[in-house]
Image (cartoon, rainbow, N blue to C red):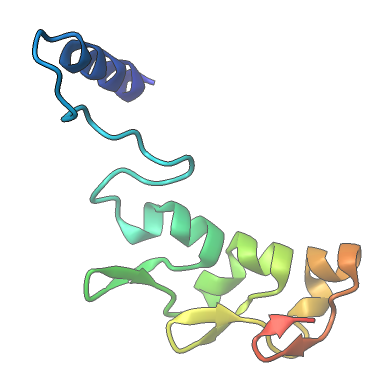
Length: 112
């Protein structure tokens, strides 16, 4: 909350100066993290299971990362393949997509 108030104040001060400037801080997209947020505390960790930092990017590095994600719960993307989470074997059967949309079979890494 304090950050939003601060950013709103900065935007007001920059926007109300005699000389117009487009240097006001950009508003973060809904659901995005502030710069330098650690991967394990980031939104992409919660949503996609990309909880480990590798070469400056957040990626999945374990089945545990995948299984704890919203993508697993909702769409069955619960198994690690490379550096991403995909659907395999029984992953889809435990997902909301299966329950609500009858997408219960894992094919090509997704629930169909």
